[in-house]
Image: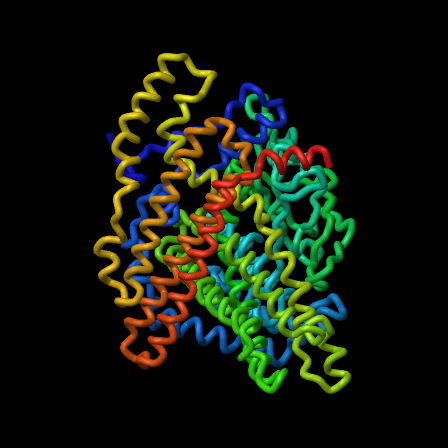
Length: 618
């Protein structure tokens, strides 16, 4: 029997019993399963959940080439100059507008076409350099980070690069690169994470040359400024009543109307709105990725584009760390700087460790995309988004707490009374959305759980599927029993990371061994949860969330260790800096063990059923 994750066949299995579902639930599940990436997930994140992490995928940590780094530096220098000279984030926040002059300067340096290939008028920079730009933007202005990210990561450029025809690329990518803003439209009033409820519809016209698009989209970021929008719409047929297709729609076409610009607690200059489509005639050549493949286009685009958010969160965290570090040195209470008081020192150390780990994830996943633009990073990017957005919010909150009243006070007010105008209040408001958009934390945990369970589903789903004949179920049960008879005992072996640990600094070898051992513990407990719950596991969302949190922590820990080792290997790094880095990463390991232990304790104590009953009574 095959015993490795890489050798398990992907058959699109599901552990969920659909026989008791209503039509809406069944449609939603079928759409989600049909849109999943059909490739086997062989990345290290999947290996961690299966108890077989392949550290050779992470060690040595991918290093950016000198040439690529220099190209990134040149662009970042231009971008920083534009931000310094033309961008006033507090003014943008106060007015709710980004000036045409600033937009023009950003377009002039190529900021709207960072990853667009040179032959289409873009800069053709790598994902790593794009992520570096997102870090810079995230540290300065959330509004600008959102504008450029929504345009390039989920707007027209990314899906065009991945799915567009040559004609589509030649027509639209040069316009995007020159500064014509684009947007992405999926969400509707009744459609958040459940596209089966989509009402926007496109039907082929009698002439066979156009689709007639009708409907309305909500929270379309960049929509009120966009020249083109990638729109998701149902294209039903008798065989596929819930089929979804992606269309490139130009906002100048008759029937496209901006109904309302939405306003928010933070990101005051977000050009987000309600877009109405009234019998818009869309040429058939503007179908993106093929008829009926819209959800796959959307999810694939998000899988790669999602890494931009943790990159911006990393920049935000670096800014918070800088503000907090300076404040901890300069602010004195009870005869000494507050950074020497244990309560503040603890916050500062956790900020520093989590910020380093966050950057490690971004650099690792970005490097995977640079190796192959079609790389399967769905799990790694999703974990980056989940972990990065949640930890950056904690860092942001701790920064507010450390600054006290000066954190809660606006920068304008601080400046008016002669104090240092640190924009903590603005950063705080802008940061809150990060755990919500591009997949809320709750949805991310369900997505990651589904991918983590995939190898087990391929092996055992048929055995518990009550809709199948008993002979098929019995055969599947025997096949799974033979596999787990050898797989499960191996997960109890007291071994570490093997030869991979030998590549590590002596003080970090035990840390990598711990990742390997805890990965096997995770795999054992996840398997037992499947065996005990069967098809009901799908409804145990809080339980699954704890498993996801453990796997995410282990993946991030591995990234931090590998990234640190790459810096240790740099012969130009002074020994004192190496010692500090090793101490920082070992401290991060201590925090990670603490968080993992908490998640495992929640799994043991498990108050899910009681919580659910109380909630229903509420």
